[in-house]
Image 1: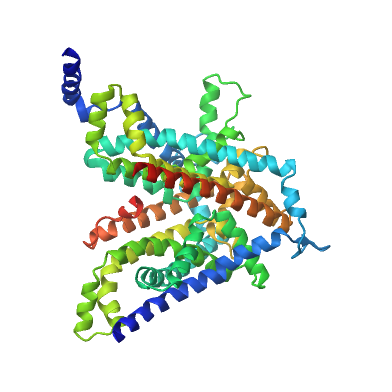
Image 2: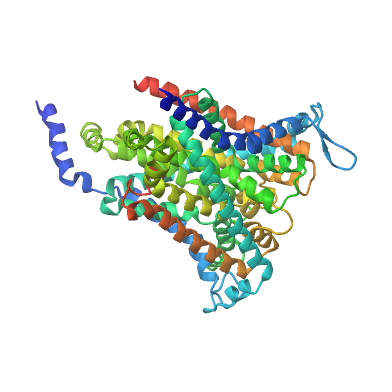
Length: 285
Length: 286
């Protein structure tokens, strides 16, 4: 009994360093963001704590609100496009990958560990007006009025490119778990591949699609690199505003309020997501 | 009667082509996807060898941009900073994260629930929020942004990854092996050190390399917590990109890609090379 109690104490002690470290450097830091949301800047531009709602009122002004809405729309579009691309890719790898399955998954994962900035820079150079792609398009007779860089499409494309692996992997895992005979049976019952997909494959892999949606939406909402490198001045996202308030703009309380707005928005989405998946798994039972 | 026969006839037909019949449209989408996935990477690599400064015309092979990089003391210094920060964050987060993983799996106290909650928050927090929060904390306690703040922030950010990866491995361990060691006279701490940790080494090494790569490549958190000098490579690259075309960035980018790919390949293959616990790809499946 004493040995058991002593080892129980050891396991509890092992919890402490990590938890204390995270409390000191992460939880308290988040607390500061919440606190400074209600703060102000003094005459010298330094942030001061306070209890004003000025910053909260500030972010619902149209200048900021439209950027928040735009971020939401861009991220949602990125999720939808990711879903549309991920299903065929995951399906082909899972059901027709054969012995190359693991190699294909590795091929898929490796680029996402390459520097995000460098990959986005690669797109920037490819798509810029004096880049390879535009040169080729101009040679084909595309009008010089047409641009790819600095459009909303480029930003959404950047988000898709940046985070699609987080959609493909859970859908792939769900497809792997799924009994292949179901698809055979579906083909027998419903005939066309599309109906089989909609009535059999899609519902059976829903959990993967839900997980992927959360995993893409979350980082996409906080992204500022895609908009900074591919979007130009008219397609800023909430991340760009936050970055600006903490550096060039030097209005930390407003930046804190914007950060809080992002967090609250994501928490609401996460809450809805958790409820939906819970309801779903209950329905499945 | 004929209605009852029909589906069976179709099923027979279906089985003939069955599993092997590839959905053509999906194959095309997949092929296109892989091409686009590697297109910007290939572009960076190819243009890093370009003789001209142009990014539209390839004008023959040259190593001048690599030469430019290695003679740029600011950039090489940044490379050193990135390696230093990644190494410290790797060691720090692996030590703290492994201990936490053991605690979370085995402690039966109420603290476990709270620790688990705190451990999960960084994983659902967008990186920019972590960056902003860290910046404010360091300013609040009067720490000048620099090497120390970078290391603390990157370590904090990495602990959760290590814990999540190792937790499932710790849970898979058979506690009877440890108990056997203790029956033979080892203390619990000795049993963990001599019996359990050796079983976990492949997973620990694998997550260490993963963390090194993630931190080395990290830009967002580094951007918010770094000072003016020394700056990590990714932050230097960002400012260089914003100034316009910089072919030496292609060279740095290529070297970084090469480094990441080699490290990730090692990390994925390590458990298999050491012959324990399946392929490192399992990390991404769960």
